[in-house]
Structure formats: structure tokens, C-alpha cells
Length: 376
Image 1 (spheres, rainbow, N blue to C red):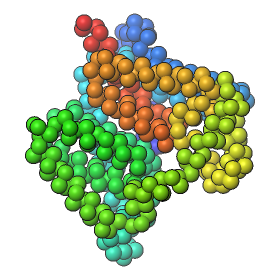
Image 2 (image 1 turned 90 degrees about the vertical axis):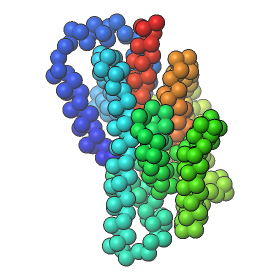
Image 3 (image 1 turned 30 degrees about the horizontal axis):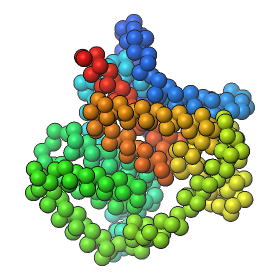
Image 4 (image 1 turned 60 degrees about the horizontal axis):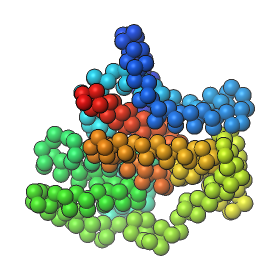
């Protein structure tokens, strides 16, 4: 939560990393493992080329790449200190888990405060005023990104954490309730698929825990159907409402931009102007006013970086998923698949929260992969 504070803390983190010293050893480690930078380095190169296409001055160029430095700085930090992060990588996801709990606590506290001040009845808790963007506004975060973090945290709880089973179940229920409040369809769909998979693989050995969790979810579902507003019901369980989602209709806009700039794309400097023009031509007034992005990362690269960007996007992810499968890093495989699913309806690598999450995840995967190869 709070992007500005997050960025300040990240800068402090890198500053402490530099002050710590050991430059000779770190430079040797980076030089020896330069190939590990390739996956994230390719995404940084796409941002670099987009910022130069067309070049409209150093100020515009620097603004175009300011969000993407973490694609270089985070792997530099992790790779130069491989031993430390290889040993303690779970602590980063543990921090993500408790960060989600803290964010939800703040959002819930604010929602309850607003209900008390407004003298609202209890069943207003699941009305639109306390859902989705209205729910997360107090924490200065986007529901789609928080939804991804929450589902990732649930996966971490069951696949990698050492918490006792009842602690896992309680935390999972809290996080699931948060997902409903977020009204993030993509996150809930991802979680539903994971739950079905978990049930199929664990039902013989953990049937009691699964039965209790399922009973709690049924109870929550019954409560939801009885008290939720029409906004929430239509958003989460109405296929008709899904068909009316304008972001899907807007996908064609990004594809049309690609057909006009097929090789290198429209670039970073002109993308908002070109998109706004096409939004207005197709009567997407709100999208033009709010300067919406493609809301699909593949189409984002296709329109901004052309066919080159699309190929890099697909190739890097195919490589990363292959590495996860080959090295049996199933937790990271799941997280990357969740990230890909989130990219269907969001351009996750346009906002800094998505960029940093991706950079942390891939950097950890790369150093763990390298450790296994070295030990072999």
C-alpha cells in the first residue's frame, strides 16, 4: 500500500545495499553470472526502446523509463548476494502475506468507520461504497494488484510456509473474505482454479481440513448471496455483466494501433495521444478521459513495442515457465501463471507495483535455479 512510501523504502533499501560495500566481491559475482540478467534485462530493453520511440528529449525519455529501473536494480541486488537471498527468500513472500493482512485491516477499519459515521445498516457492508476501488482507496492501491498479492499469499501459505494448519486455514479465510471485498473477478477465478486443483491432489490426506474450509466457504457464500448488493452479485456471478465489460471491447483499440505500427510499435511518447484519439473515435469517453492503458499486457506490448515486444513477452514467459517445470519450482510456476492470468485484464508491467512484484519473483527464481545448477 501507498506507492510513494513503498518507493521511498525501496530507494532506502538500495542505498543501504550500496553503503554496505563489498563491491569487488559483488562485481565478481555479477560478472560471473551475467546471463542471469537476461530475462528481466529484455523487459528493461523494451522499456528503453519504447522511451526512445520517438525520442522527444531527455526529460521525456527519463520519464518513460523511471518505473522500470527495478528490472535492473533488483536482480543486481539479488544476484550479487545470492547466498543470503537463496537462504531467506521465503521471508520476502512472508512479508507479502502480512503486508496483505495489514492492507486489508486498514481497508476494513476504514469501511467500518464510514459505516458508523454514516449510520449505515450492517448489510451495507457489501454495497458498492465499500467494494473494489472504494474499498482500497484508503490504502492507495489497486484492487487487481492487491488481489494478485492475496492469491499469491494463499499459495505461499499452503505450498511453502511452516505455519500450523489451523493458522493457515484462519489466514486463508481472512484473505478470501478480502478477495470478495475487492470484487476482483480475475483473482477469484484464479483462486477457484487453485482450490479445485488442491482438492483433487490433497483430499485423501487432508480431507478434514478441506471439509472444514469448504463448509466455511459455503457459509460465506450463503451470507454473500443473502446480503450482497446487486453491484457485487452482477460483478462476480453475472456472465451477462462480464459480456458488457468495456475493457474487453477496448482490446480491439490496441490491436488496431499494432496494425498501424506493426514492427516497433507506437512507442512510449505517443501512445496516450494515439489511444485517446482511437478511444474517442469508438465512443469510449471514460477511457479517453482517464487515459486507460490496454488492460492486457500482451496487447500493451503489441501496441507499444510492436511484434518485437509481443515476441519478447511470450518468449521470456515460456522460458521462465519451462525453468520452473524443469527445476520442479512449482511454487514459482504457480505464481508466474497467476501473474499471466492477471495480465489478461490488466497491463501489470505498466504500473510500478506489478513491475516490482515481477522483478522480485523472477530474481528469486533465477538465483534458486542457479543454486541447483551449481550444486549439480
